[in-house]
Length: 386
Image (cartoon, rainbow, N blue to C red; front, side, top):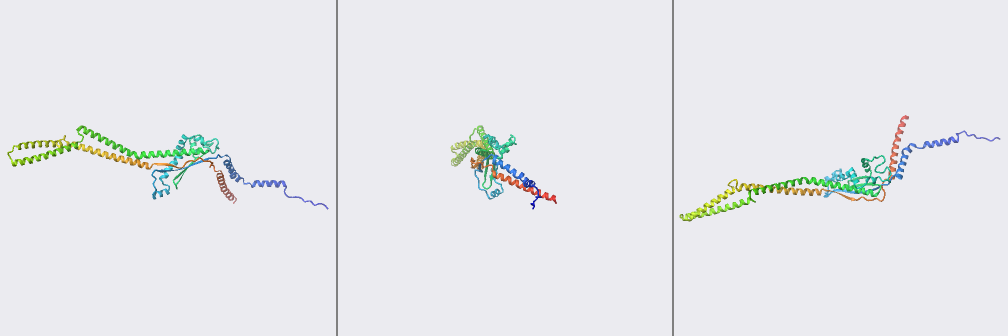
């Protein structure tokens, strides 16, 4: 009896293994690997292996006036839409912190390039990256990556956040920026005071000039007329004239009485002589007071006019001085102050970069873009097949 033989009619084993390997190769999602996984791995290598840790120094401050009044209902409503005097004052400091002036002022205090271009830092984290030139504009743009300032409208507080490769450098830069902000506020205060009191000071100077000019004219008048006070002299002359008129009236009454009792009395001649003398004195006093252009009347008028001008100038000077004092006090009440609520601290642990968050953000973004691209490609492919 002969043995039965089985013959294998299928594909060879080598061909099966080769096809299996080919099917595994084709199952790998190479677009996904190259567009999502590979960039994520590169980013992860950078953040976990290459990226230099950065220390953060944070400060909080407020900008307010000396006499900060409680806001009215309208003020609260305006604050709700972002219109607040306190905010505008704080934003002036914010703009300074983000300005080139702040960087220049900071460079006068510290070597910013050396601080933020540390040799131990990786090239992508430094102040000036490999593709940045040595220009001042590149320095300014790079500095913006290390400084962040924000405002909280709920409590009116500003936050300054500074990054550096050493905790001492971050605290020093933050303190330097705050010092520059304080200098800015002081300059604004000086300018506001100068503007507020300039007009009042000019009024005081004009009033002082008027007082001095009138006083000079009054001194010249007294020197020319040889009178210290013509009004007093006129008053004395009027008093003397009144006394003479009284004496004349008394003598006239005495003569009339004597003439009625003794018409032939020899005393009548004596009384007549005395009456003529008194009449002569009366006429002389009248001429002295108001009889001619050289009399006291026009001189007294000129003197009283000068006295009136001097009193008016003195009142104007007093009013201008009071206005100046009020302007200065009001300017002091409106002066701004930068108060540090939280001073910059020296961190004992690096806060940047946030490695896991950065890698997850990159992976999520690439995955989203890949998904959108795949859907678009699938739609185009299906449309072509139809």
